[in-house]
Amino acid sequence: MSAQDLYEIDASGVNLRKLCGGGITDTMESCVAAAILPGDPDAIIIGDSKLGADSPTLRFSRGELKNFFDAFESGEI
Image 1 (cartoon, rainbow, N blue to C red):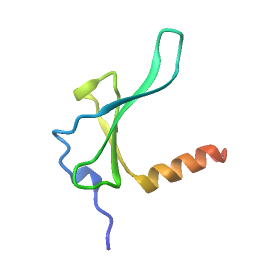
Image 2 (cartoon, rainbow, N blue to C red):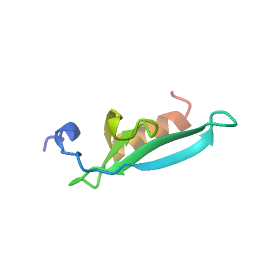
Image 3 (cartoon, rainbow, N blue to C red):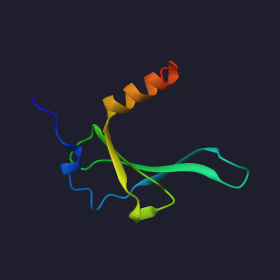
Image 4 (cartoon, helix red, strand yellow):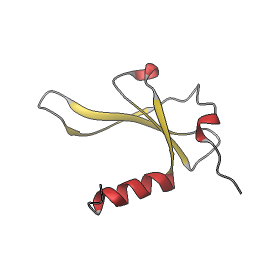
């Protein structure tokens, strides 16, 4: 079974949810916008919350994000 190209999925109606975490400065908070990709509950679309609908997006499977966070937490990256 071959992996699906997540960029082939139409995401034109997706409303990205703003997710904020620690502050960059006292007056600016760091945020991203994310949502589950339609038709694939294992895929996530991420964009820049400051750019809204004009934001370029990145798409990842949950496994890819888990590998990224595992590498970060282990100090590998």
